Image (tube, rainbow, N blue to C red; front, top):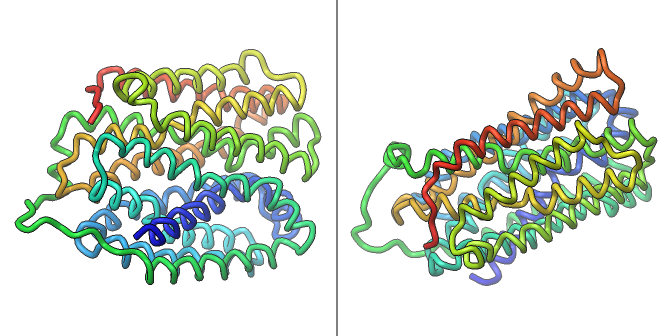
Length: 391
């Protein structure tokens, strides 16, 4: 099982890579396949939408089929297949289709890992395990930054993405061979998604899930690249460096949030503090826009650290779910998290296009990021009413 969990974490590392690699690929995709910023924002949004919509069937599959079959089959067909479609794409439509397939393939990986943690480890350490898993997996964010830029320059983007398709297929096969499904207790109670939706304690947490992951995912996955390019004339190497710095910051944030529930005596307070900080930083781009590349990267990095509360919010919501609904509980929460990121990506493309018609790039990007900050504050106003949890 240790080897199986290790390969699930590597698979989620690739999931992190795929959701963020458009930020580095965007210049070459614009030049070679005619993709616009709006096309890439749509493709990125559809990745998150596909990922989110798959959470409900994935939750059922985890509870009924187990994590081994659920994760390995979808990761092979969707993840590896989608990467192969991406590598052979000749236009924006194929890029979009590939991202949808990859989103479907990546959908079960983290939830399969969390399902095993919830079934086989003490509830008190779930948050730490969840944070460490996402922190280690966030190396995929690093891989999709400067290293990806180097690979593209050395081998071309098609060969690079094609190689990742082969790697993805190999990881899927390893999951099929090495993961062991946790045993289910005899006489375990039955239940459905409706049982979860009837739990008032979950609703403020789901609202928080909807807004907590979207800022860091959206900025790191797409907007950091056009922002520093349009504002400061950044080249591919500088884009790689900026995305690398933000990726490292997100890794640090995941490790910091992991034990936060034990340090603060509960999960609610660190979630509130961290996301309020993200909102303030997003508003800073609007009210006091950075005057140079280095200050801009520093702001993005700070958002990366404070915006990594996703595992802790999942842990908060999971604590209210009964054991027999573990799979559907964590995937329902993940639906809101990835769905929020997808909606944010869909909305930011046309929003920026509208803002840019009447504003200079600095003002348009600042207003866009400021709107994101206001959305976070709206989510926090609901989460204030959430019940705290420690178990």
